[in-house]
Image (cartoon, rainbow, N blue to C red; front, side, top):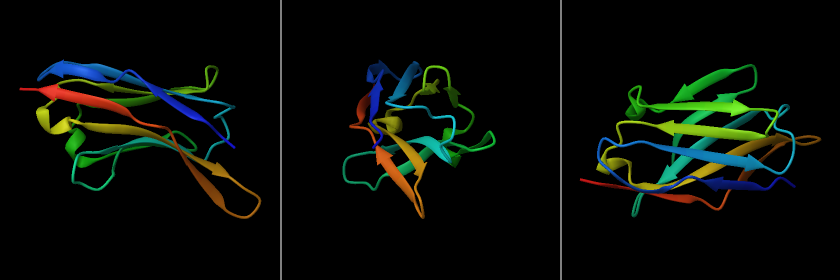
Length: 119
């Protein structure tokens, strides 16, 4: 069982920045992947950014170079630095971890952190 705790959300004006953190209850070094998703009211949850084992990083097209995902294995924490925020970025942001099991991988989610961008 892996617990993920997000922090760093809040209210910011358009053009501003926020840094989200996701602290895992155990070592993240061996996880196949960790990342951030978001869900806006009335919309489906969507990928924002993801770190895949080996260091590969995937960003959603809408990130447009504004966000940076990073990890600190020593702190078992994944970060999402968000710059040039737009009102369209308003959503609940969720941390996700993919953990290897004996036969399948398991997906774990944090409780979410609200990001609100005012115009």
